[in-house]
Image (tube, rainbow, N blue to C red; front, side, top):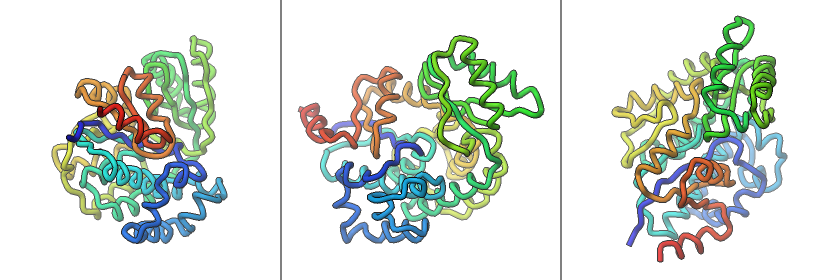
Length: 313
């Protein structure tokens, strides 16, 4: 008997060297059935998919336009392995930023090959956007952080906003480097426990991505997108699109809009099903715990299949 679960997919930052072998999905990636996807991804990124993940160099793996298709495909392989080994009935899909594209593929809204092309284009456009930075603010209420960002951005020479609303105690801000630094200092002055600058030069989910979003919208409009076959929660507004045109609009808006992950996890809690993080790393597992989800699993856990089988009993 299959059990119900919300399947969530990680975003950029979860990639790491050896994530195919450590995730136990190397056999799927190397199988004759899916090798064509590996070849497609290699052609897109102009790098050897296997070689890059297993040997690096890391700076190339972490390059946005490379990371996005590589991480999408890796997470998709995690999903295929899950379906092959566990009797699970996905009732809800969601993804954190880039992970939303893997969710769309899993929900059969996007063809995997089209999705790879989309995120390659997305990454390239993000790299062309004005340079900026991001920082994680810990131990401070989101509304207070938002107020500080708005106060700073009132100055025409500044631009910073909340980018990832990850948990009640973790919000990521994004914008111009000097604006992010001002916001970090003010947050610390107003009681934040920590303000950690992230190792990125791209201001994801900020107004600096507006022009990239306009170009991406045009590209999105050339791709065939179907209505999801399962319930799917989008990052923007935590809405469920009612048309394929709305999906296109939400994906374009996502580039400069915040990832509302707290609301997403609340929807999962209300659904009453377990949550499974499907992809490399355990970032979302940690956020699920922070957001009060009691039953969650990560496919990258070396004991995942043992744990999920015992839970099913």
